[in-house]
Length: 112
Image (cartoon, rainbow, N blue to C red; front, top):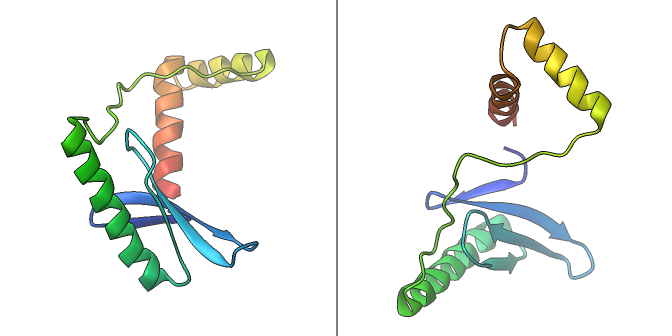
C-alpha cells in the first residue's frame, strides 16, 4: 500500500512535511494518537517502535484498550445519481448494493 509502513505488525500512514523537513508517521487503528517523526525511513522505524511502546504502556496504566474495534458497518453518503448508478451496477451483477460495494472496497484495498 502506498504511504503505509508496517512496524512490528502495526500499520502507520506516512507523509512528508516539507516545512520541517521530516517524515511523519501516524499509527492507524488505535484508540488514540501515536505519531512520530524522523529524517529517514530507518529513523522512522525506530521512532515508530518507541511511540507505539509508549502508547501501549500508557493504555495499560490507564486500563484503556489500545486498539479500535471495527464493527464491519459504516454509512456512506453519496450524490443521488451515484447512489442510483451503484444500485444499477449491483443489479446488473445480480448482487445486492451491499455485496457490490463490499466487493469494490475489497478489490480497491487489494490493489492499493
